Length: 418
Image (cartoon, rainbow, N blue to C red):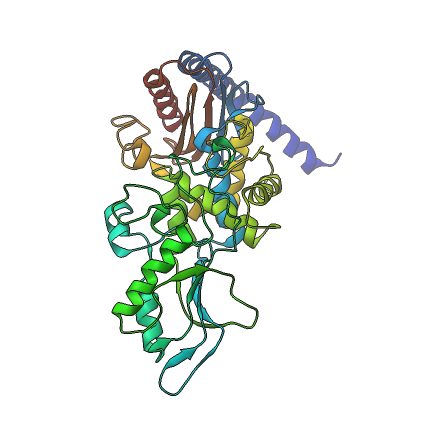
């Protein structure tokens, strides 16, 4: 061994000696912290619960308990659904709803043929009144199609207006409700309108959202001065039909935030069907779930995906899998947009009143989850040094939801104060 390698080795050995006490002290601190977090986990959620805390900067596990036990995710399933949607379709993607024609417009502006309102699986297609009342203004204005069609010169239609919802299957719910309309979701449709409600009042669900959308648009078209038949029908646009005009949804990152912050089940289920239609084999929940599972594997983890929202209890993953998914998304090109879809502790959505006055307030972005006996909280925190921390809490034997939330909030505060 030459002179310089020997000097380097001696210097390295000296560093090890000097740093050993500090490293040992840090390890003892981590051990004390982890003991506290584990205790809080069990107090809040019982012995079946799982926990993982990661230092995102170096992938180091700071604490874990029952980390590999696969547990019901509840609405933590939305992390996987929205992450896959952003990763596969892109944060800036927009979902089109088109008006197509199977005929020609003559010199007087009369369409000699029929119109087809073709749904693209847009979960926020709505009337302006509904969007303002229930969705803080987020929405795609269906009625803009009438004005845009008239601006193309169309003044009348000899045929009918058909509603084309064939991008998705016609199952209205997920496994939890026997694939029927669920009061927790509303009727799913490839041509959705007003989140599946029959009117902008949001009082009851429509039996067929696509027909409702077509009827509302036909009325808007007549008000815009376009003459057409009153009756609408279901029907797929024929091959060769021409797009006359369209509207596009807000960017997908906005829809993902509207899914995660208030934990919107309907949006999550629409997104998973959209993934099936655009990336998978069909516009079905099962095809979308397969896309979500593949995406999770690609970012280094796994999930048993059954639906998009987490309502079905067989959506399962371990705390380690959730944490690794969050880590994979943090490093993904869509990661910054994904993180921003999560609620800020003490400010937004399902955690607007939680963690206030603690180290987690304003420094953690999280996703909650709740089913009978199940409560989860997972997300990201900025620690005292400004580094990124990742944590996942899956409580599976909850008998007191208030107690579960209290212990989860204390765990998040400890992570933020790390």
